[in-house]
Image 1 (cartoon, helix red, strand yellow):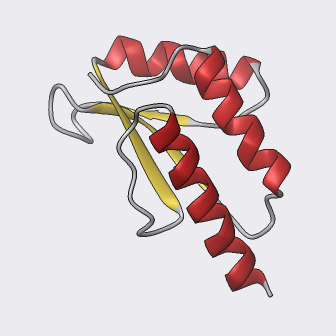
Image 2 (cartoon, one colour):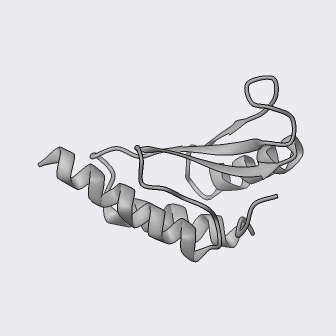
Length: 99
């Protein structure tokens, strides 16, 4: 069922983020990956787009100064391959810990 598939993705992504040294809690399908400076978030989002992922960079004034982030949104339509691709792309672009 879609709900169970989505929660499986949420748990898989949570575990993958933690393996990269990033804090993550399986609370919802939306995952913020806090990078700190706006330029760092913009560059990471650009590199992830080049890897085929649509990930938004969220910056001030939407979030407080020093908490610019990437925003990942998972859905039941994703596959485990998509989740693994996102985690591998994060690793490749050097997003392995917070600010």
